[in-house]
Image 1: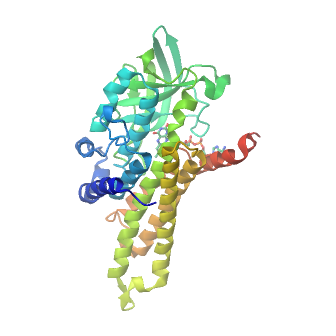
Image 2: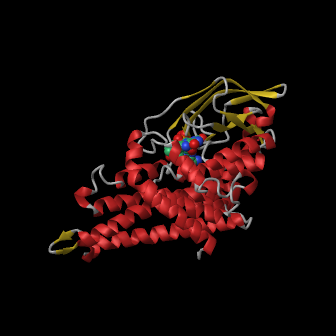
Length: 382
Ligand SMILES: Cc1cc2nc3c(=O)[nH]c(=O)nc-3n(C[C@H](O)[C@H](O)[C@H](O)COP(=O)(O)OP(=O)(O)OC[C@H]3O[C@@H](n4cnc5c(N)ncnc54)[C@H](O)[C@@H]3O)c2cc1C
């Protein structure tokens, strides 16, 4: 895909910020395990957050392709920090489409400025793959809803400023048709959180969110009652392509560093880059990443054109983290014993991208979606 001049200019802004401000302290931030809110604010000041949201809310209204290009650039510097703009684009699109004006006017400008982070709460302790089979209950009480239950494995759980929550307003027998979505501000009485001790991505964190008689105005419902699942879940096709590009950014950073090493490291009296056993695996990595990047950009271009892209988005989501993981692993091997230390960023990147082999839906579920797009219900009826 050939980029426009505007896309190249925004890419350059994101690239400079990623390499100068994010990359040098990627591991230091991760060791601290704290989301640097001043850095998030800096991204907002540079216009890197919610860039795809309408101008009336502070965004630039750019297309999905441009948003994806920026996600990849930021992930090159820090995979975890790039989850912030991706989350803002996903949740921002949901709020723009389905929230009442009072919520949009209050929250969207804050998200774009880097002052508010929103978590998305779908998974429950009994499982995440069978997503519509959820139990967290939302009971209507006059002009309010009262939420009770638990969400788990939620990114940003203990550090979000607001939550998009999927809850059951109908009966279990209604399946997806009995599910509605809600917006719940952090600090609402009855809402508590925990934090998990994860393999990676500590700065964004993951944990459980408990709802104990959490009372919210009915105007906080997103979309129609009983239609939350189908309406709001459409946003995930967007985040799946963005996640694919985040993974390309992380893998590309490791590849670039590994190529450089092959020019400097000597063995048997010559640079190891002269051994094809060393360069060919990296050439294969470049090939995979180039192909996946183009698939992701194509998927986003389909979205921009209003064309179907469910199957393509699922492909981006399983291939991105899977091949990024393998490529980063190869880069560790290319660096020999230097690669097998926490002093290099590769092990951190490998752990971080592996989280998204599960988060936002596993590879198995993505392949099920692709199959369903091709043979319909025949792929899921047993
Ligand atoms: C880093 C990370 C971040 C996350 N962030 C969020 C978040 O912000 N919000 C949120 O709501 N959730 C989040 N999750 C949860 C994630 O979406 C779920 O973990 C995921 O959907 C899988 O659910 P599960 O872990 O309960 O696995 P299960 O549903 O129990 O599945 C277990 C295994 O069985 C396989 N499987 C199940 N059914 C099928 C099938 N029909 N065909 C083939 N294979 C199948 C799965 O692929 C998996 O390998 C996150 C998870 C991680 C790891």
